[in-house]
Image 1 (cartoon, rainbow, N blue to C red):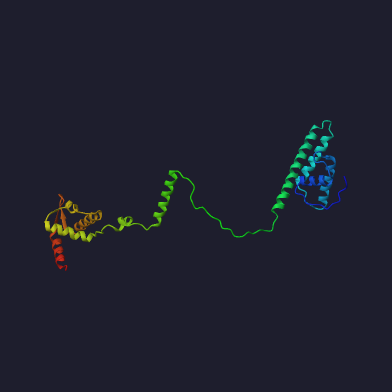
Image 2 (tube, rainbow, N blue to C red):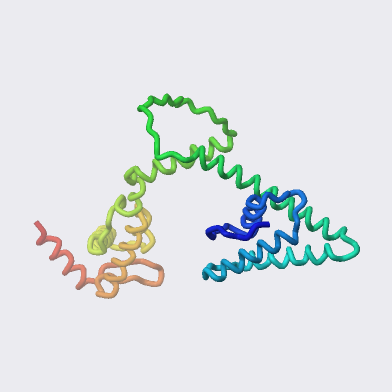
Length: 243
């Protein structure tokens, strides 16, 4: 083999370097002379170190592999060495094919750019997918739900808040006094018989408590309510003064 006298190149890995040496020295890739290839390989590694180039562990691993194959070839039984040579040859052939394909792909993909005239693209808007009945039902329910969320709240939603009549305690005080005054004697429970709402019931009950607290009405053990004389006069006087 001739002495190395070329400018050092950057190789992607040890297989790339071995292919370069095999091609340069016209060696048979199917029957590699490992001893000669190892000599060239180590010489190249030394030159890489002299040039302060980074020698990765992959290159050193391949060097030890070549040394092992060379050593196995010196043994009486060379079957292992032949198997190792075949394995290395297979890896190199496979790597060589990959490099060739990569080069072809690079040639096909090498372009600066391309343009083409504007083209009209027709779209078929017909929906062609098929769905089960369960999927259609879920989609309908979801669509209806989203639509209802965008609508303003209905009056029914506010009926419980503003739809009921507000009953004041003062109004029910007048009602209780008038009822007792007309009947003279009135059963407590009868005040609630014609109540139209819960608010009216509560306001009536609070009115009775207020009247009892202010001693305007009396109630006995039989729940009979009567007007206190002083309280009744004050109420009649106030009622007659109203316009």
